[in-house]
Length: 312
Length: 235
Image (cartoon, rainbow over all chains, first blue to last red; front, side, top):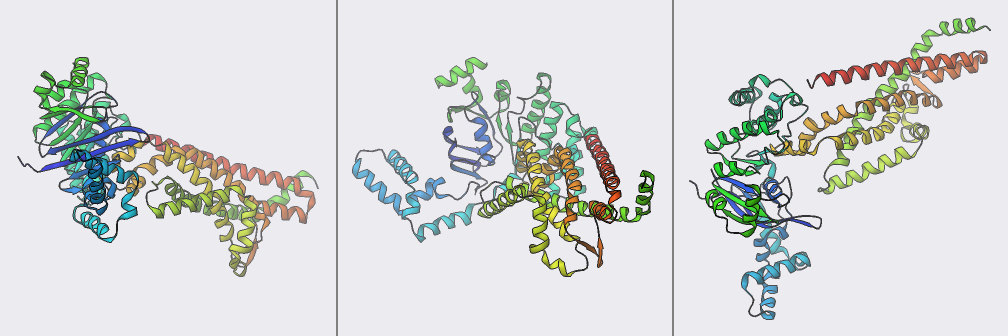
């Protein structure tokens, strides 16, 4: 397996006004890996998932996909860039004089926080620094619209395009983005619909479908783009109980094909069965992570224990 | 002059009535098209995320436009267009474009707010789904959001069109020309005839009212057909 991460999340913070939903989340997702994110509601797991393809804009932090930076080149978003600045060096020296026995990590964090708070970069830095940012921009930045083609997303509420038929739902993006001709896209769509046994629904509108059918079509809509990773945001939470199985089965089949997947879910059994790694989120951080067997059987963090005792 | 004689007189003038109805409808139709295009553009600008400075400037312009148009009477707008902004038409043989533009610009402000409310009524998940497959904001708007928004606002849009059709009667305050000859809209014709023959004024008013009512009934029928067809599209 390739060791270079497909997705890197670095120091992710998300505030909704005063509410801190994510408080510093960092993790890497390797190609072919299946990661399940569990945790109580309000723990920030959906927000984190939605930050990966920038449906939510992170307040701070970086998202990297295939070695490309998706988050904007705002210097305050990038710890590395701040560290390049003269301001940082000066402030750090001064800080270390004032706090001689400070831990270097903590010192760095405090200095960065101070620089952000007082907008010191804008006040102090000159052309050389701006050039450094520009270099970073040109080398690594990629418009998220491009990366989103490779990042499939499945929503809790399906979000099929209501004004289009099932077939059009599957072919719109590939054709519109000129990745396929209409004929190619339709052939691929029909192949996908046949795979999930819904080829006969190609020409109906989403409003006539059951929840389970909608979600399975939403999954193949994402697959029609041939993505490199699939993000699932509580894919079964809005379904009637008898329809959960068909959707989970499809996700499982997909996992067996080697697809990289990140799944936010409340289905613990499913997470245990499918995931290579489970992240337990609580209070906006990854409180614990590990292999599913270990994490479910022998949680280390008391909050994980408490959560699992409630849901299992 | 008996009532029947008045009716017979009106019947004699049926050619003129037909022509003036044509003028009224032409102005209304042109204005609806212009208004709709302006409305969609303004609504999209108003709704666009204000991250780009260009969008911010455009949004400021859109708000100013809507404020001015909604804040002044249609007749005043028409007269301003006629006597200053579009004064160049004074020297042309045909000036029907003046009321078409004036009413179109007027209607655009109202359509913008109607369409904006329609866009707001579309679930945000639709935009997110469009973006998640790599479509741009503009493409998602065009292919997904606006078609759904239009469907929602069809009754309100028709309401605006009906108001517009009747509002075009204001145009009788300016002198209309087509191909160098003076022409009249429906209400303009009624007033002119009444001045020439005061005895028929009341009768002609009723006839004018009936013609407008017929047009509006036809529009209402069209609206129902359209709504029915769109509903069928979902099944």
